[in-house]
Length: 525
Image (tube, rainbow, N blue to C red):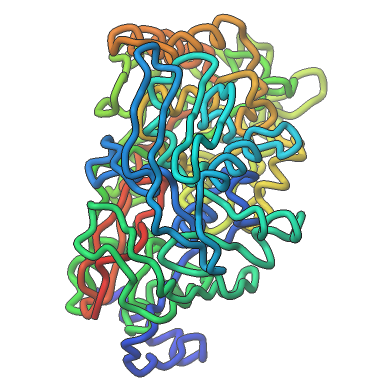
């Protein structure tokens, strides 16, 4: 606590800490660490976009608090054909957009069609399945036909990628959609966005169709939500301690123990929660094209020390790409990665990288100094610095470049780096494997440029499996192959928390795609 008190006093003296606002029962004051490049759900993978999108827009299906059960939302019911290829959704007939337009089956058809349109270049389009057609049978009935079964379709339809959008809002705005305006059927309505500064939402007064997981079906109990972007960790800590904000999902992990001891704050942990902090290799770059080099970097670090020293125990070491508690985890992968500094040195020697006069390895006149792209003010940037120290001991010099979250996706899209890092949320092994390792997802989110026919076939068989055993078998084969190729350095399974002012009641952390805050229907003072 003394550390936080010192930060608060220091920021007060320097003028960085504003006085706590008077209690306003009509405004929910929220703080976050990172902004997003766009709030167009069909064109982003960025989690800082996902929570805002889910506040303003809705999906056909919601994910219950257990993190695994799809429940009715805009679709009040559904039927699945015996062959698993056709889903018939019955829609609610009382839903309207913030603009006042009534939502119908035509909006569902337009939304899925836009997502799947190649011109949209939707990186998460696969989450909608291999769509044959989406048709409006009547104003409140949709026939959703697949080319092949997709056992996870309902689960994937809970994701922000598959929100229902308003064509009358999307098309006039063009590329400014999701930047200048965002219409939706959610409990909150978009008002304004000042990048890197503030997002303002207002209550959707007509909203009354909240999913059954909430006690309150709507509308929300606040007139307005102000979401401030505060990248600096010390400022976020001080602001919450001083009562400036009601809620944050961006409280630094290293200060969670102090927040738990605070008389002013509540800390709520998201459970279940599967989040992997990893560093991926762009395998088409010569410096990291050799699996020996990739393995060496992975086994030269001490994950337990990083978990303890960098995140202060708010994470567990990750020796596999999938958390052992996640559905369809392959236990055989547990033995693939072992920390062994001596072996790391030998692998680098075998790959032809020899120690230079400055202690950094060289080959053909090139230093083993890969560029590593991360988002600034995140766990990835802090952990990268810890890894940098470990790797210098074996002759590898990570050159870390931390980018602001609003431009990090664009910089990663330029492909000019050897490694990058994010903390990726997922629900199942198949969810994560399908997201990153399918060759159709090159160049993003398959930034490794991993193109392997065997991997693609196993992914297809896993996604179209009609039995749990077949699904687990095929997704398990993918896990083994991509881990033996050392396409990533798995580092930490990261805990996720929401921190609230104690005057805020009804807060519950949701696991969905790092949202933590989901809809906010039960929140009140």
